[in-house]
Amino acid sequence: MMRKFCLIFILLATVQMINAQEEIALPTEPSNGFAFSLGCKVTIKLVPTDSINFDYSVLSIESYQEPINLRKTEDLFDKEGPPNTLTLYFTYGYFGEKMTEKDMRIFLVIKNYTDNILQYSSDIQRMEDGEFEETSNAGIYSKAIATEIWPYMIHNIGLWGFKKRVLAQEVEEIKKGTKKIEE
Image (tube, rainbow, N blue to C red):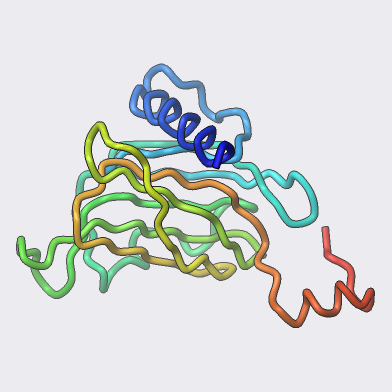
């Protein structure tokens, strides 16, 4: 509970830093997590802290106000990206051929340029000055695009706790000593 409180406090402090884009020096020092405001494109670089876990550094952040068409998310990203990076868009999006208010959602679209299947934790801030609350996510496969969608307003999102996804079979092999975790 105390760890969660400390993390939320750090995320809230980080939101202020990330909102004041002209005040932050990029790339940032690696950290376990940052929070980002709605309407941005961000590139982060993962920095290993051990054989499974990562901190990350924010390499770039820019305003992105265009709604995203769910059917065309691959058009947002370069085919190849810098090693050990992810690029994300946190903005409005819609389904279908044309944007209607009924179809509008909040999207987090991430392209994983790493060689790892990743899992991470995410917290959302639904009220402008409200608290962050934990939300689920599906993780992201190597070299793939993942999309998270919410049907309600989200002002900020905190992303933290990136780590390699270890499959159940691998866990058993590691326990038996027949497999080692790759660095």
